[in-house]
Amino acid sequence: MKERLTKKENVLIATMLFGLFFGAGNLIFPAYMGQLAGKNMWQAIIGFVITGVGLPLLGIAAMGISRSDGLMELSSKVSRPYSYFFTCALYLTIGPFFAIPRCATTPFTVAVATLMPEGSNQSLALAIFSFVFFAIVLAFSLKPGKILTHVGKILSPIFLGLAETMLHGRVLTDDLFLNTVFAAIGVGAFMGIVIRAGASTGGMDIPPLVLQKWFRWPVSATMLIFDIAVILIQIPFSPVPQLLYGIVAIIIQVMVMDKVLLWGESRTEVKLISTKADELCAAILHQLDRGVTILNGAGGYTHDPSAVLLSVISSRELPRLEKLVHAIDPDCFLIVSQVTEVRGRGFSMDKKYQ
Image (cartoon, rainbow, N blue to C red):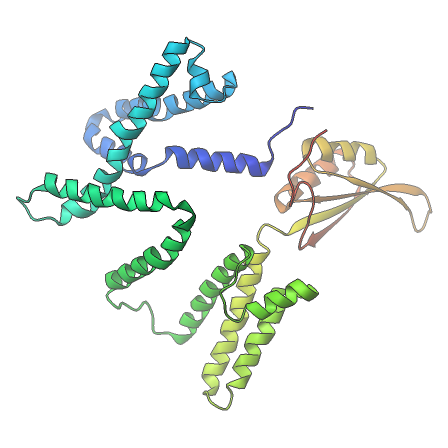
């Protein structure tokens, strides 16, 4: 059987193509083009769709249909000298000739040129900016393994400082309850992301993570116990309203973190008891592309033997499954239950077709 791409692979490829083609030019140029087009809007849209959308899609289709491993192999179908010429010309065009200089000119035009006084030498300023810009890019490129470290230690504090400066100390609300709720939501969401990535914040999440590793205790439950214990220790030293707000914040934080940890992991388990088990099994296998386990059962009252189909699907697939079941066997006995985690092929592992 021809191997098919999994849903995860399709999403990764779609995201890669989106990131490949979408940039500042795709966001800015269409609006700028529409402003210049005026009454000729539809002609401009048709031209943009052909050149900005149609040609890139045509290139992707050509690579897929020809089953070429790269541009060199695709262009070699014309001739070998042409493949060298076309490949070099294309890489120079999207590299040193246009794209690389544009990486410096775009941020300079948007962020620097607008702040410069009239009559200043923008060409000299652009040259200095480009030198500094590409020096920073070169520094990052020479040590790619430390990019995340540099971003975390240098760029993140700079961005936070700029955000604070832009806000000018502005406070959205003085309501203590709203601040408690939204702060807890933010902390819980980011703690869930950190723990899902296999890391920790270096704080009170370490003991729950250790207990989860050794005894398989839920992180959210143990973290709730530890955090509330810390709040209770402060009873002799803090006002009661602050302690109550702290407990509310901890409960919200743990609930949000638990949702983030289980995001995308929960699945729906279905059991089907039917006299048309073979047809239902084939429909689930081929139309839903989900696995099925056949269990041998018997009616408790009639003691007649019957097959029980067990399958695990996503929540989105449940309405489609119910429609299939109703079309094949309206009298089918269907049991639906939620499971918090599923491990195996098709879920935590890629599907394997034979």
